[in-house]
Length: 178
Image (cartoon, rainbow, N blue to C red; front, top):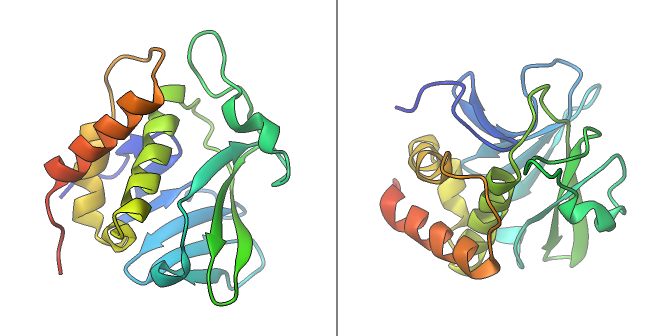
């Protein structure tokens, strides 16, 4: 089992659950990876489940207070960190009915390395492309994939290099549980 506090940008294992955003604050928005789908946690709400089968065209991340602020997709500092501290959004298109959907998450107090956030996003896209998003519901599998992607140099990274490292992470993490 991967230990708690394993992280990859905004992805973190806390209390045995993988999620994007700060799950340790009671008043925070965050997205949990469950066996049946993405679960949006919100203060003063029961939350919302998005089944894996409804996600159709990949997941991408934007940064900022508002979901429509897609210009802040790549705001990074010269030291290679995510520049904004106002939270973020996971965007996707859902089927049945077709709709664009955003899942909000609040950032941790720690800064995120840009390379980690970009690798996470590339992994989410690769899983969608291969029809394997359900693997995110397997905590052991996510732990292996996150451990493979975490660390390394924080340097300029190309789309091709991101796709390659995501494919390598899928192979390294194995098939997952049925």
